Every structure is written in structure tokens, then in C-alpha cells.
Amino acid sequence: MHVPDSLTDEVKKKFCQLIFDSFGSETINRILCAVLLTCPWYQATQNERGEQARHNVLFIVFVSHDHQFLAPVNQHVLDEDFVIDKGWLYAVELYPFSHFLTKGKSRCTEVLYCNDQAIVYSDDQWNRLRSELSYSKVTGLRGFVEACKGQAVSGIGKKGKDGKFRLKESTTFHQFCDSYRLQHHLYSTTQGIPLCVQVFDKESLPDIAKEGFHLLEQLYKDPDVSKRDIFDVLVKWRDSTVDSMKKFKHTDHTEVEAIVGRWQMDVRLNGRQLSVDRAIGDEFSNLTKLMSDIGGPVSTFQPEQILLVARAGSYLYGLSTPTSDIDYLIVYKEPTKNILSRCKDIKDNYESRGPTKELEYGAYEARLFCEMLLKGSIIILELVFADDLEYMSPSWKTLSANRARFVTEKAIQQYLGILRNNFAMLQNEKHIGTSRDRKLFYQIFHKEDCVRSLMDGHVPNVRCTGELKEFIMKVRTNPLVGEFSRDVLFKIVKDKIDNLLRDLAERPGRLKENMDYKLVNDWLLLGVRGITDSKS
Image (cartoon, rainbow, N blue to C red; front, side, top):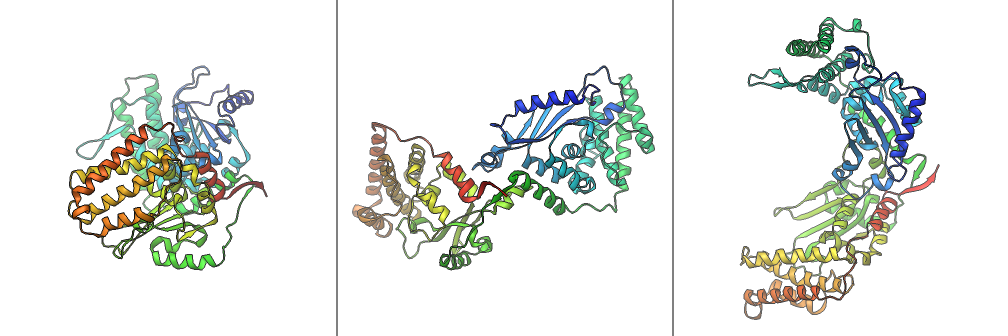
């Protein structure tokens, strides 16, 4: 865990070339920094043998392209590409790095405040953060303090039944050094001094730390030195440091998040401008009243954030009755500045549902909406297929104008899933004699008609009309007797589903398989987020 003497400026140039070749422009946008992370305690307590570096980590922070960072997928999926951990190589995208840094993750803090010798590459924007964000603000974060305090011991110890930590016998020399490194960070924080990120003078350590240092030196030369003694010294140093922190004042995390957030947004925009939302005139007066009626978090949004408001359920299908529930679906957008500057995940949906609610709603942020749309969620697809909704923003109308591009095999399969599920519940008579039973029937008739339209390559009729509507309303409201008895209706839906599956299998051709990802991604990036290519 050394910065090898061989890491000269010339060698750094070769390192940089390898890094830039590995992380090409098609893979990422650009690299902010590359740092060789070391452990000062490992280096200080043993002699370097030749020029071989041991346990070093090449830590890289990179910026993704807009279409990657703003992709209509959930954060878990992004993390699979945005955090690369190979042991010797750790590469992390700008957002996870910002999140980890503001949470107080020690490695990210070490990377930001490492010594110049360990920096293989850094650009001007990275250097700007190093100069603007004082180390004391980050090391003073409760997350950093608690992580160092806990991990210094828990990494090599285990708690017994009596609550005391005892050494794991399998602990290696460099694991001891890592634990002492974390404890040293904790100690430095209490003293208001910079992190220990390079080889230090052991005379600057408190006496208890010098004792541990001496034992580690002995352990490196003689494996029979008592590891338990080294552990006990570490625990004593940790406990004495914790005792001295009783009046320690932690950094306000919102202050750090604000600095890192502004920097992160500047890095992402890189001189470009965000388009400004414009008011749409009289439509807003109706929209604000609608938002107020829905209430909850929806009423706190700015009108410009609303992309769509739709009365959902049977009302959307033209099949409502006076006793039908009032259920709204809202699609909104989080302000782009909040997305680009976030240091933690942003809540992307709000729901208020239940039998005691007079008015129900579900509000979905644009990214989540797009994710659900690409997966073929029927509730979401029907919003795109439908007309004459309560409120449609200009950007929504742009998406809706391309609705035919969502007529796909995936859509058919999703509709078939509802048909099969409803039929199974009718078959097991779980809801027999209830209004839910009627609803299962009418949904099958409605969805079967939608699949028929999709099979022919047409956008389905979300709102029922004509004979179909007349028939379904009789199912919804008439007594289930005679030609509308449950047994008769069950046979009808069974025949409809069987015939539908047969006709699907006998089709001469298929629709395109999946939703148009590029269309959705472009709409989210340009139409919703408003990120342009022009620079100021």
C-alpha cells in the first residue's frame, strides 16, 4: 500500500493513456480524476520491498453521458454500471460518488483530499471541488465520524454475547493497518487537522497510537506477535477518542450537500443551459384548481411540473357509474436542477389509496413513468393511448402523438396477463357475489377488445363506445340472471379468451417486440428535462 517511487510523471502519463483507452467516449462522457489510494499505516509500519505496490486501489471518478444518467431505469440498474469494483480498481460515476461523499464514506473523502503524489489524473472541475469544499466540513459529517468510529473496530472484531468486541483471529496485517487508518481519521477529526493520507511522522501520534504503531512494526517482522494486544490498543485508542468527542459539533450535512450539489450540476451541464418552462395561459387556472382538489403533495407542485392529470379507472374507460371511485393518475417532473444536483435518491411517486379515501390518486415522476411505460404497464400504456384527459401538457401531447409506436408484442402480453389473472380469479370463485366479481368480468371484455385492436396494429380504444359499452354496462349494473347470469358470462369470457389465444397463435406475422426505448429516452431527456446542447 505504497505510492511507488516508480510512479513518476512519465509513468502517470502512461497510466492516463491506459485509463482513457479503457473508458472510451462511447462508454462514458469523461473522467474527473484517477487516484492511487494507499494506506499510510501499511507503508509506515513496514519496509517497501522493491517497487511492487501491495493492496493499492486505483480509484476513478467519471461522468456518464446524459442519456445514461437520465435513463428511464431505476437506480439499482444504474448502479450496476455506475459502480465498478474489481478490488484493485474502483470506478464510480459522479452521482454515486457525490452520494457517498456526502454520506461520509471514508474512501471517497480520502480520494478528494489525497496528497498530490497519489493523483494520477485530475481535471479542472475536480480541482475546483478540492479547493471549494474544506476537508473539515466533510470529516465533520456525522456519517463520516460514525463510519470511522464503527468500522475501525467492526472490520476486524466481532461482538460477543457480553457486548464486547473481540478480535477475529483471521485478521491480516493489512486489515489491521486499515483499521488503524480509520481510527487515525477519527482522531484527526477531533483535533481539527487534515486526514492522514500519506506517510506520517509517528512522533505526531498520541502515546496510545505510538504503542499500536510499534506493535504493528513488530508484527510485520514477526508473525508470532500477539494480534490481540494490537487489537486491544486499537480499542483503547478508539474509546479515548470517542470520550473526547462528547462536545464535538458535527457539520450541517445540508451545507455540504449544497456545495457538492451545485458542483455536480455544473459538471454535468459543462456550460450548457437548461430550457425554461413557460406558462400556458388559461389552462393553468384549471390545472391549479385540479391540483388543489386532488390535494396532498400534488397540491404543492408548481403547475409547470405537471405533465398529465387523468381521471383513471372506469371513468377513463367510459364505464363509470354514480358510485364509481374517484381515482386520479398524475405524471409530473422533478425540476431538472434538482435531478442534476441531487446527492441522494429523490422520491419519485406519491400514492393515496384505500377504501376509506373519498378521492384516490397515484402520482409518478417522469423517470418512473417512462420505466413503467417501457415495461408495458397497462395502466401507464392506457394513459398514452387515451384521449381527452383532464390535463395534458405540450410535452405530453408530443409523446401521445407517437402512441402508435407503443403498439407492440409486449403490450399484447401485458394485456394477456390481466386476462389470465382475471379469469383465474373468476374460476376459483374467490369474489363470487361481490362487486369485484362484476369488475373482473367487465375488465375481461374491455381488455379482450384492446388486444384485438393491437393484433391488427391499431391503437386500442381505451374509452368504450357503441355495442361494447352498452353490453359492459349491463354486466356492471343489471342483476346477474338469465342471459347475464354468472355461468353464462363465465362461458362467454372463456370462449373469448380461447378464441383470442388461437387467433394470436395463427397470425401470419408479429408486431415489433418491445417499446421504442429511443423515443422514450429522447422525450425524457429533451422534452421533460429540457437539457439542450447549446452553451452559454
